Structure formats: C-alpha cells, structure tokens
Amino acid sequence: MTIQAINVRNQFRGKVKEIIRGDVVSEVDVQTSSGIVTSVITTRSVDELGLKPGSDVVALVKSTEVSIATL
Image (cartoon, rainbow, N blue to C red; front, side, top):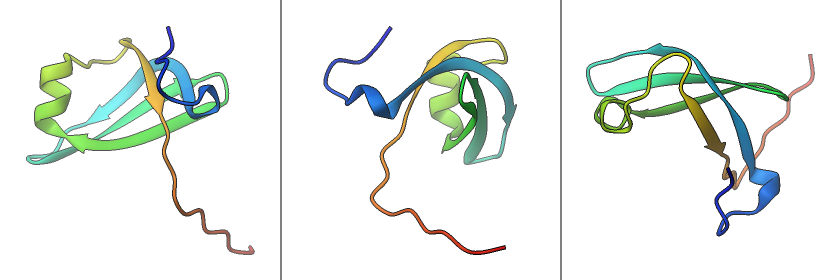
C-alpha cells in the first residue's frame, strides 16, 4: 500500500506499536522496518481512523526543517 501523490521516500509502512492518548492530542508510535516513527495527531483523528496497537498503517513524513546537535 502506497499513496501515489506522495514521494515514496516519505512513506514508511508499519504497525501501530503504542498510542499514548491525551485529551486533545495523542502520540502514535509506528514500528517500521527503519525503526519507530512517532506522530502527534489529534485524539479525534486516532478515533476516526480506528487506530489501535497492531493496526497496519503508512506513516507519511513531511519535513521542512531538520536540526542536528552534537553529543
């Protein structure tokens, strides 16, 4: 499953590993072959998408800025 209008490099197929629900926003951890991708989305969207641990999903990544710091 891919979404045609989005660049393939920005799509990570995986399964929902964990959802940390909040009143307004929730954190959704997606286990992909490249590692865990975390998305912060509205709790309403979590419910409307029917997300739960084990759900098959595609994480779509759009980044306009990436910062790096030394350790």
